[in-house]
Image (cartoon, rainbow, N blue to C red; front, side, top):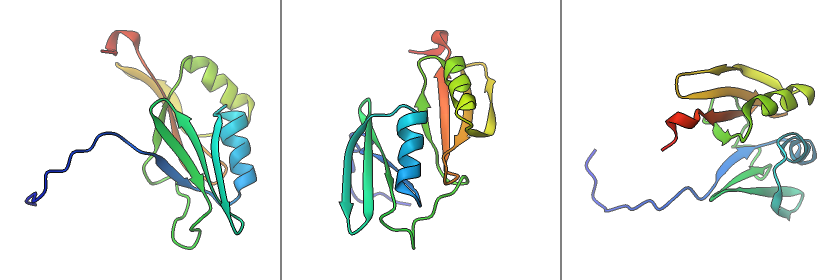
Length: 132
């Protein structure tokens, strides 16, 4: 494919996940993942909810349930954990379902947990010696 423009991507604006039940999803993202709500835009019972994480934003929404469906087979945001073992323990204590059990690689610890709608949320922690 030939490029005809000179696109310059300056960052990731947001990562969005479709959800079916806003209250249930917010309970997971706010109470289990401990994310801080930064916006909840509602229009006719449909919500676009945002959580700022570092320089980017994670959004959950039920705005387009007829076209945008939850799935564990799609892309996944990878949340960098401050303390990976503590994060795994907290997720297990909250009853979270792991679709990929946490494991250690040569460069990081990684695992995948499912939100209440089955969307894959990766938890991650780089080994200190691999961070540049």
